[in-house]
Length: 470
Ligand code: MN
Ligand code: MN
Image 1 (cartoon, helix red, strand yellow):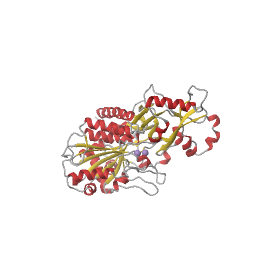
Image 2 (cartoon, helix red, strand yellow):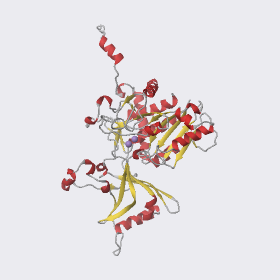
Image 3 (tube, helix red, strand yellow):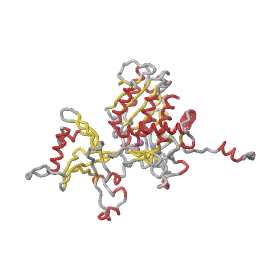
Image 4 (cartoon, protein in one colour):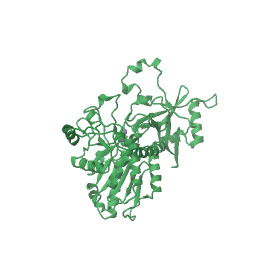
């Protein structure tokens, strides 16, 4: 016979009063683990097929069309359940499902970005030096430049020819493809380099990509390696050196998404930021089968990593114009709709890294496998540049997530005055929308190879879906 359990008033009171977080694996059962791992397989396919904003938009449009979404045209009939999209220049996308409630009640927006840090080719990129051919680059987004040397790179993008024809480039992804690489100094000769501080160990002008070394067969002309490269490019793509002037070519890490760890609980990949929110947000709107109460809007935007400026970034008016157009179909004002709207700004946060604990404040850091991160405010130097969600809106999201059994945690991007950052939340808040950042914690953010936990990716999906269906 077992001894009767003694009651402990302090424990009971603690259970009642303390806020505690748990690792997801201690909460869920095996059938849910399987769902989580299965979802990750789909996500990895997306990662490998969508390394640039253009490719992500293309992937999303195709997936949406398969689910019955059609391109929105002004004046088209909209009724509850109508699924539409607007493709903004092939680099940003808005998807919407018309809800059963009147449009003036507001819409629910999940907004993620599909651009990631990378190396863009300069307008005149190609040159030969010491019988090697190279591309000059200008990095895009916040990177630690030294991380991008000695990493196999693939080249993605478009070249627009004089007659307007668009040539698509994607090389370095197939196992039979060549890759490209930026060289770094051997340690034997790097004593001066290693004395420099981290931001200048490798400078922006040293991020030159090696693309060839074999000269064109001739004993007369100079720059024969460059000539040989151009001859290959002309044969393969029909482009000349001048065509680089009107091109957007992006060098991205050539490696594929992989499981990380003996237990396969993590995913390593280029560009989790922010495809790790974009994919769950996309899946959430595509997988929702019932007609939502509020009209649902999913935004996959561009240019977040360079500050959201430009006509495909959320500091432009493209989201507002879309909402205006929909409101007009019902004879309502876009401003009324926006003022009653809510948004989950779907972006990543930094995960606590046991190797670098000093930059974090442990009580407010996000942890891998503790669920989707709700970030009330971002910014830096005293919350500068943040939209800071209100207690009321955090309360509303907290209730929504708990009700739908979404495992979630709070997060703050590092210690106070430790640095900082921002998301698209501030730009959407400027439209008088209630916004909060909700996303996935990431290790090695902005590195060529970033790490996330499968459980957190799935909880992001559950959160975005709950927001649509709740
Ligand atoms: Mn991001
Ligand atoms: Mn980022």
